[in-house]
Length: 233
Image (cartoon, rainbow, N blue to C red; front, side):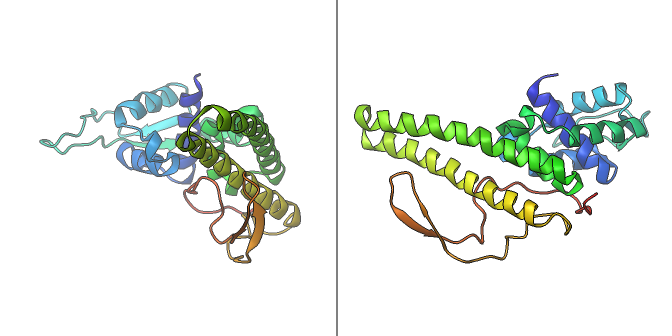
C-alpha cells in the first residue's frame, strides 16, 4: 500500500472509530484532519472505502442504495453509512500502536498526532521522540545548505531558506515541550498541558539573534484533533 493511501486508511478508520458516518460527512472531516493542502475529493475517498469494505474493515449500512455522485443539478449524495467492523477496530488499534519510522514522517505524523488521545503513552513518546530526531537530522542539513546559500544566492533566496529553517526549529521546540509534558504527566490526563502558558521564553533564531517568544500558540503545524478525547489507557 502506498504511503498516501496508508495515511488515508488510518484517517478513515480513526474517524469512523468515533462514530459511523456517510461518505460526504467523512470527506469533510478528512479535509479538516488532513488539511486543505491535502484535500480529498470523493473520487479519491470512494475507492479507499470500497477497499476497506472488501477487506472486512468497514461495514456498509444500506449497501443496496446505488451511489450517485453529487452534482449541482441533482444534489444527490450517497446514502450509504460506513461503520467499523470488529476487524476494522482491531486494524485501527494496530495502526495506533505503530511507532516506527513511517510515523515520524511529514505525511504520517499529523494523523498519528490527531489520534494521540486514543494512543498509549509509551507509543506517543516513541512517535514524538522519533519525529524530533527526524527533524534534528533535517535541521543539520538545512543549516549547511543555508551557509552555502549565503555565498551563492541573492538575499531573497537566502531569506526563503531561513524561513524554512526557522519553521523546523519552531516545531522542534514544540516537540520538546510535548515530550517534557508527557514525561511529567505519566499518571495524569492525556494531552499537552502547555496551552495556557504565556511566559515569554528567549531562544536563538538561525542567525543568532535573541528573540522573545510566548508559548500560548505552540509552534509547528496546527494539527486538528477530531472527535472526543479518550482517557489514557
